[in-house]
Image 1 (tube, each protein chain N blue to C red):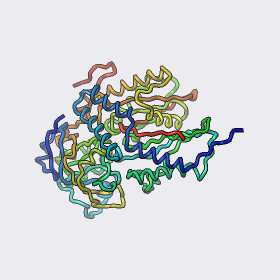
Image 2: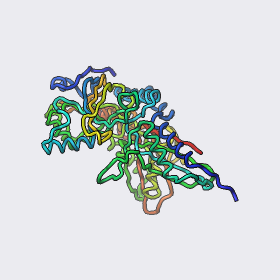
Image 3: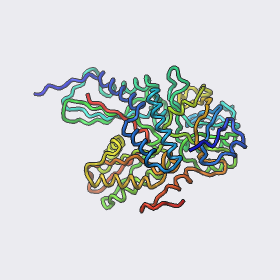
Image 4: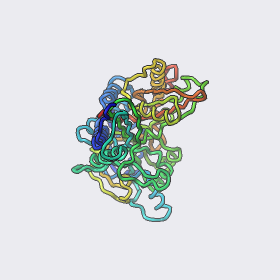
Length: 285
Length: 193
């Protein structure tokens, strides 16, 4: 029998902390490059170019001054894929992740934006915990942590719709377009749109969130879904919302779609919007 | 895109009326912060006839909940939050003399009507440009409700804070006129100009 691999949970805490500090301060190169390309090659609107230029300069300042890119340093969403041969030592996994979140937000001088009760007293937990944790058990003896601090200007503009089997890809594309149109300037365009299609309501929502984190330019390996991504991106950019919502060609940097097997009677579609500051970082331990 | 000019707070009617939707301007002077929780408390204070933490007359409110101030800095990152959540409270504040708002995102027709009636202006800072904006903030102090943390009311001194006039005192709205110029119909033809 194979000997399980031990991972000390202090490593998990350190990893989550490091990833959140990095993600909140330093944008991924793919997003940075896409913003520069949009400003220099795509955007026609003068005010749109101005907004893109401010966003790019903001990334430069955040990185050089070690300041958060956005004051909304989000709720910490943690995707963790855990090899089934891993055994954790030294405590409890959820606490270890939350300790990493708490330390990152304290030491990074990040805003704590989590309230303990969402409806009644709305009292801030003071630690930015708990994190939203999505766990998958996978083969192997490694553990992958993918974190994203999710801001709520864009989260608030996300949407769910249940489609009937008779409704085809055009209807899904229209729903994506309608969701982005209704969001207008509020989610801080140019956005990254993640779409989850199929499964159940919660499965589609998790797929959509993961899809917002794919690299710019990544296409679904199924050519039909890849085509839907490209068509949806064009449809969204035809809206003219533009950077900051002030009018322009670049409303969205990319649309990423994921799908899963679904039920014969219906198809949930979740459109999750991420602002231009799509902050995320990943490590395998 | 060139700057149309500089404005200094507190704002006079004349200064407000000189601004046009789409103008890019630099603001200097004192501004106050306030977002969801502070607006709720300001409205409650007005309703309960209690004094406000600052005189609204001629003032500008910035919708922001800054990140904590790191050692050696004036303030943390401080970009705009979505203004629409403050819409239910805004006409009340405009009636008491508020002249300017800085934020991002659309406003309700009630807010726009009240802005026209009260000669006020809605200015846009770039959402997500929070580290850059913090460079324009030269002083920050808590004015009221420190227990609200980032949602407290802060008095900020700003120098050349870059904003775009989103909705002017004549009701012209860049969120309508701007995107309309770049709208394309599904066949890819340009939309109405």
